[in-house]
Length: 362
Image 1 (cartoon, one colour):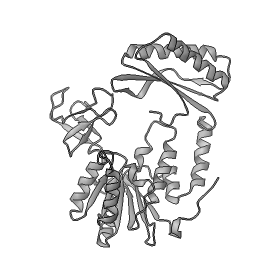
Image 2: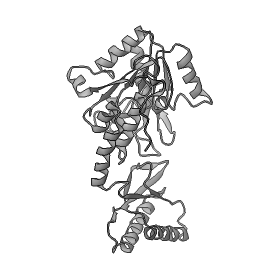
Image 3: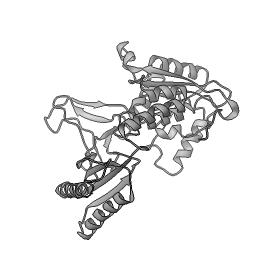
Image 4: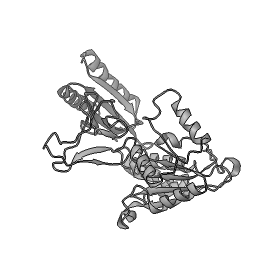
C-alpha cells in the first residue's frame, strides 16, 4: 500500500468541522446553511477569499408530492421521481431525459396542495443569492455543462474572474487546484450514505476526503464544514480526521460480518424487458434452475428474484437475482449455460446481464 503522508506544497491539512443538522433544526434554523457555515461564508466574502459548496443533487427540488393524498410525480417511462428544475420551470427525469410541465393540481385527487420537497444545486444557488445578494456565484452540474467546453469555461471563470462561490455536484471535488479557496461546505453529507449499496460508507468517505482536499491548498489556511443528520457515522468521523486506516479497519470488519466483498463475491443477474410478465417469469425460471444446480454447494446464498430498486427505466421493467458466494469456474459455467439457453430460446426484447461485484447496485 502506498500512502501520501503530506500534501503538495507542504500546505497544512484543512480544519474539518462536523455540524449536526438535527441540532440546527432544534435551534430553529430551517435554512440550508448551518449558522457556522453562514458565518464562515460571510467572513470569506469579507476577506475576498473563495468558497466551494458541494451538494450531490442537481435540480431545484428532488421530488414533488401532494400533501392531501401523498401522490408523487413520477416519470412515465421510469418509475422514478421527477426533479423540478426552476430555471426552465420544468420537471425532468434524470434517467431518460423525459420532461413535462410543472404540476399545480394533483392528478390523483385534484388538490392544489402540491409541495416541492428536497434540495438540489439550483435551490442552493437561489438560497445563496438570497442570503448573500452581493456575492458572485457560479454553478457546475450536469445541467450547466451540456455544451462543449462548458466544464473548462466554468472552472476558468471561477479561477480568473473573481467569482466568490462555486456551487456544484461531484464535478467540483475532483482534483481541482484553486489557491484562493479556503472554505468548503458540504451541504448534506448523508445523501451518499442512504443509497441501497454495500459501498455506501466507502463512497461517503471517499467523497468527503476528496471534498476536504479542495480547501487551503496554498499558504492560506483551509476550513471544511460538513453538515449531516448522522454526525456520529464512522465514515463521516474518519473523513473529518482524514484517517483512511481507521476507516478501513472499521469497514473491513463490517464487510466480513455481512459477507460482502472482498470476503465474498456478489453476483447480480439483471433482467429487463418492456413486458413485465416476461421479466418476472424468466427470472423465476432462472432462479429455480440455478438453485437446483447448486443445491449441493456450500457457502452459496441465492436470493429470490425481486424488482430492482428502480424497477422501470425507459419503459423497461427491471428485475434481479442476487447471489452471494465465491465465484468459481463451476458457478461461471452454470451461469453461462443459463445464458446460452435463454439465447437459444430467442426471447426478443429481453436483456439479461450478469455483473460480478457490480459498481452500481441500483
